[in-house]
Length: 338
Image: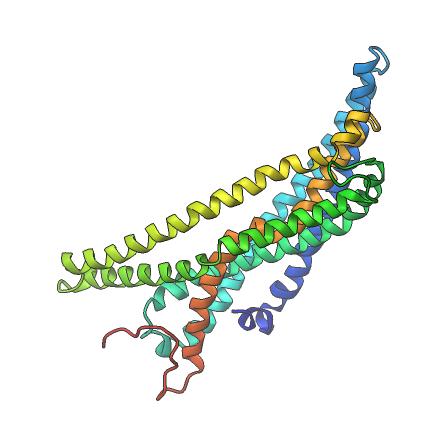
């Protein structure tokens, strides 16, 4: 899964240099986010000044602020579009590297249940998910490095927090505590989902295999057999939907509550009128960025569950490659009937 791409000289330019380019572009997007956060402060201070004292600002001042945001946004859009285009090619090259490696060992692998699906579909899913999670992880770390010092400094303006009272750099500690709470909560809630996703892929593969054989062999995919295999698919999906039901209740309840956390924490300071509207916007946005960085596992949990399922399938697939011909590994894979 990794060696065929990252340790293969043929793909070195894409795997090493391509990864470096994606990370560099991600870092630059984070720096643009910092500039936008600074713009929020100056713009909303200007708005507050205009609303509190009519005629205190001029039209050129207002439109200058709008053009500043426009110039930053255009650079952000250009970088984002380029990175998305490059990443799609990057992911396909990774898939191609895995495909070439597996096809070299196809005589060993063809007898594995769902072998065609693993080579044709799971390779693409694995490369896409790992790239996406990896970039989001690095972006979270970069965002944290950029916005944590900002929130650390802005937290000094918070005079008091409900229940807790006055704590130095209070918003930073609240952000960390809230993110850890959500991570543990969703990890416990979704503990059964990876196994169900893995089982789901197995029953889908069995059903697909029988239908493919039925295209060429009239004796295969008979209605009773197909109905029985589809019933297994149906049963597993319904189990999966049930477990995702309570998982989604917890997930979305937590994410919606996250919107209120900084507003509640800043409540006493806002009521006291200690800072301006621009500072309020800066604090709220910096808090959201820091909290989202700490919530990487919370926001990515569904994708991680899918990755675990694909990884288990490909890991068992590769075990067949390295197993002696006379002693196939007990990997849970079901060979096709000869």
